Image (cartoon, rainbow, N blue to C red; front, side, top):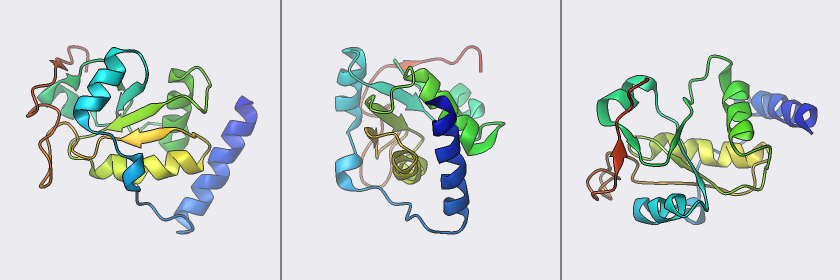
Length: 149
């Protein structure tokens, strides 16, 4: 299964660089920060903060979120492999992505879906919020300092 997953990612990387895939999320792929917090608290989702370590240090990380830097040293394949490992190799596991304002996650969500993850959503307001919605922090949701970033 792991070898097949790596092959799928390699093909998707080629297709992504040629512009075959549109990179916009649909509304049904979104989940609000408050709902995401309740689900991660209940153990029903894997919440993944895809920002960079310096961003984690600046703001802290949403409580319960795993930190997986989207700018992985092994590129997208390394990033996707780390997510795959984090969910125990279950491509159907419920995953929710969060970044600073929802921009990066809105682009990554459909790509992860296209490489085989079947249940990926993102927090459109992110950690700090955007023009449309206040983020995780402004909504008073818990943040954990990133002591080892």
